[in-house]
Length: 284
Image 1 (tube, rainbow, N blue to C red):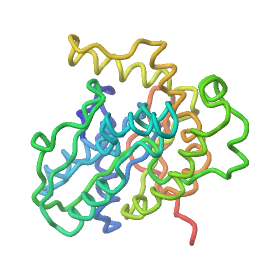
Image 2: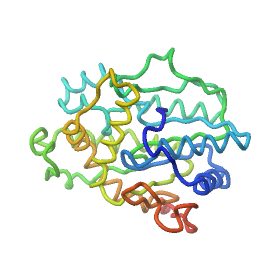
Image 3: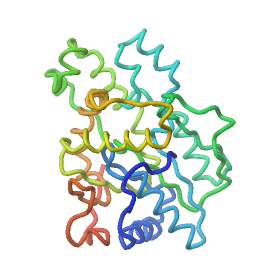
Image 4: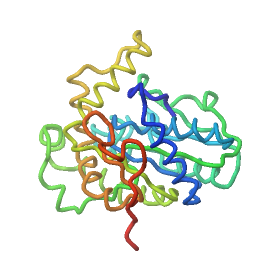
């Protein structure tokens, strides 16, 4: 999993400890952390892993971003299905089978290599460069739309931003992504024993959060370039539809919901601990 790229101060130590306590008390082997781009998922996962290490536990980290399809595979989809599929991120641009295999290996205590994706190169790292996990007491799996269900087909008719209006006029791209979300991802979601949601106040904060993330990426490797501010604004539009679906649905599907303000801080009492009444997934 990529190193945290923002929120230098991280989350409150009490909240971090409470997240680990929740994972252990629930008996989860795979603990999911979901939240929109830039919400602090990788930061929280790294902090929880560090706390687990202090308690003598082995913790493995995996991001859904690490399971993106290779660039060459996405370019084939762009030629054969729709040009927008060259861009990583939306449903249908992940190797879901790879993510499932890694999580299954970790759950069963088998040693496995953990895939890693280079966002500046926009490609998965060669397997020889993947770190290895030889067993784990807890697996932290994070991603921007973990647990999100597909939309009803009728909801896809009207474009919701300039990208859909100008570059997906017939709706073919968004239908293909939604069908992939309905078909391929539920099996991955079922690998999570428990799901925590870092709940953004609205989708409107995502462009700024993602721009901050991009600046941090570029600061780590200034010679390698990166996206401009307009490029980030366009990039985020690829995620808007599913992001808004996540905002609508995940507060009722996640086991624990941690609301965030625009500064990515849990307001009020939740700043230092988990909410005292975790949400429970409805039966069925």
